[in-house]
Image (cartoon, rainbow, N blue to C red; front, side):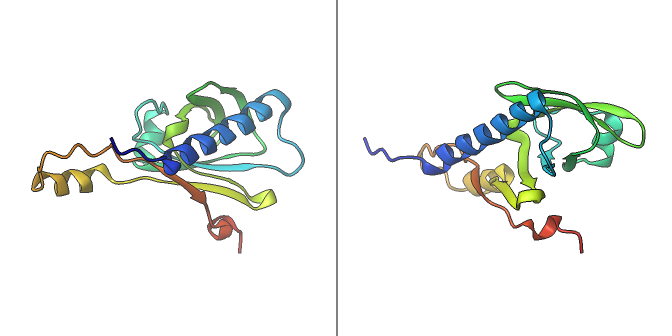
Length: 153
């Protein structure tokens, strides 16, 4: 039986754990100094719970900012919840860690991007290529994200 170390999956879990630890500390102690976060997540991911009007406005992905006004930040093993203010309208959000695509703290130029493999593309390729091989499910890799897209010009 051929086995190998799945570094991509291990890195993915480690980076999700890093985000979980950071958010847990912020939930307990608040944001220190100039720290703030841009968190982009997949609004279609199972377990994401946002208001219908937000889902309509952001059908694929949404970026939220944890900085000046947020309430009720709670962190569990698989998701976090937070209430954010959208035009003086507080809205609770439930975001599974597996739905997070980017996590950026521009105050210290730190960022992570989680790459996903498009399941639809793979299914189309697999339809004509059924040779009986049981490939492992696609995984998400973690990598450092360029902060240029979050810089104000």
